Length: 141
Image (cartoon, rainbow, N blue to C red; front, side):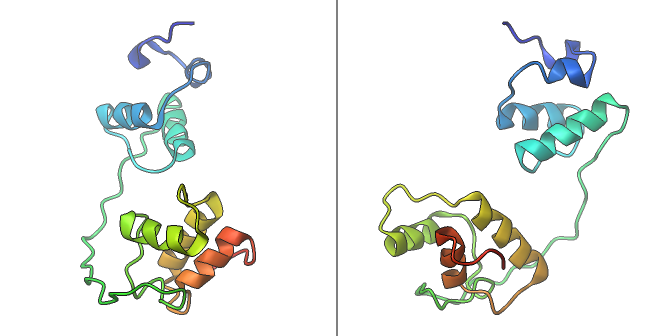
């Protein structure tokens, strides 16, 4: 089945008949002036709203001044907020060493917890707590 160009699709139901990669959803949202960040599920909701006549626009937030992390060595006791956690290579390498898994990937629970901890500013949460989430020993941040 050949997928039509997005702009020729007339309804969300028709849109759902086709598989879309996240990168494609981002391009579609940007091309139509819509919010273009988030998960595939979030982007699909933006597109669903678009087809129902609502435009979900990117929220403009005040720039956040970020402190450079002062933590040089990462340990399980390192504070999540304190070290400026990201899903980047520095932290992936830390979790590879901790788990011994060369192909380590952050799982859905870890991502959700990381977002919640950042949103709540939980200074007590540590990288070890996130490791416990990975192993299923802890269920929330």
